[in-house]
Length: 155
Figure (cartoon, rainbow, N blue to C red):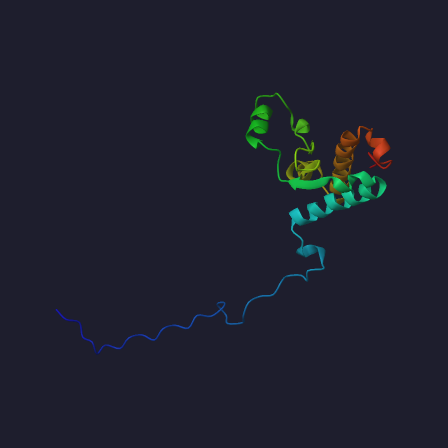
């Protein structure tokens, strides 16, 4: 059975950028407004600010690399230890000092998620990030945190 070839074929539908034909939406806020920063970007800025402040006081920190990781690695080992009661939520590390190896500098790592969980507001988060960075720098320099930064521990 042959199909009739003289049947009209439907015209292809034009595709629009959006359903109402008004074009793509622009950003919610301009880039210079803090709303446009993601939580991770805002956290990176807090770590960078704390590091810059300490580098002005301690020039030898210019060779130290500051980094942010989401969670301590390996996360599974930390979770298992917390479930078994070996560690509490308070003993999950907030930061870590990784000593220099061949070809890599000293590195201070701040863990974003544990810090965010402990701090309820942006101000608390900024203070906690600063304290974590100061503690790790103090460990690196072999000094007490109060000697590294007199503002350490201020609320």
